[in-house]
Length: 85
Image 1 (cartoon, rainbow, N blue to C red):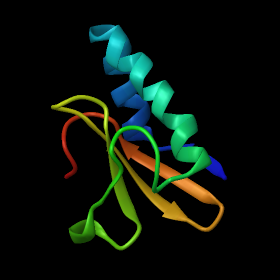
Image 2 (cartoon, helix red, strand yellow):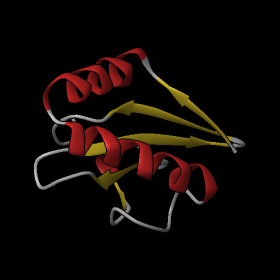
Image 3 (cartoon, helix red, strand yellow):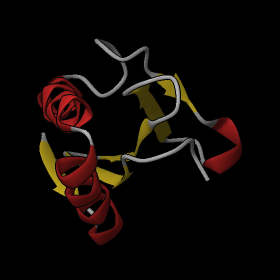
C-alpha cells in the first residue's frame, strides 16, 4: 500500500526533528506499520468515526497522534502533532 504524507504532516515532522528526536523517530517507526496494515499494529490504532469512515489515528505519545485516511491502495497521513482536529 502506498503512503502519502501531506504538507501539514511534513511540517509536523520538521517540528519534531527540531524539538524532540525521540518522537521524530517514533513517527518513522509507525509509518511502515501503517503502510503494512492501516487498522492493526503498534500505536493503538483507533478509528475516528466523527471525522469519516476511513479516518484513523495511532498514538505517538500521550499528547500526539498520527492521523491518516485510508483509500484503496493508498494511505494519506494528514498530521503527526497533537490530537485529531
